[in-house]
Length: 193
Image 1 (tube, rainbow, N blue to C red):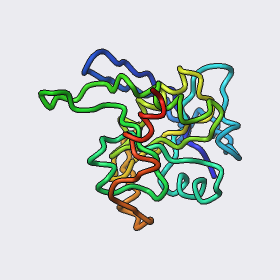
Image 2 (image 1 turned 180 degrees about the horizontal axis):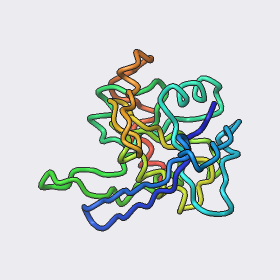
Image 3 (image 1 turned 135 degrees about the horizontal axis):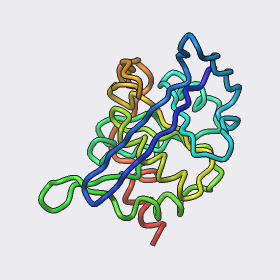
Image 4 (image 1 turned 45 degrees about the vertical axis):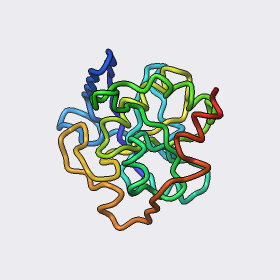
């Protein structure tokens, strides 16, 4: 399995989030040597710099099927309950405020820290890949060492180099829906207080 690696920067200020990525290593130019395949996502370390490991939904499913990874859905509670990969945990990275405007969930890091080990293998997903990229960077900065972004998310999106990426739901992978008494955000949030 060849991993896709690129450096991403995330700016989070109030309700404004900007995610910028550059330098994909999956499609070398003619002057560049191809990136060596990463045998395992945990081996994707680049000289101490923050490198985001991006997975396709197909790669994520293979890793989840291995039983040693968990899926963290960072979408809102209604999105999570409408449909998600089986066994997904929900901690929204953004939530609507009283006016309906999306803003950063101030309890995101605290809730994730209370429910997951810093070295746990976590695949982070959202609807199309933007929020999960932001959440992956936040978790990496907070000391989580094995977090991976699922490009395309649940509904499909674009890779950082602009290619279409099918989402989990578009690939006819298993889906569960409805509230989850063990993995839903309200239950996870309660354990962090």
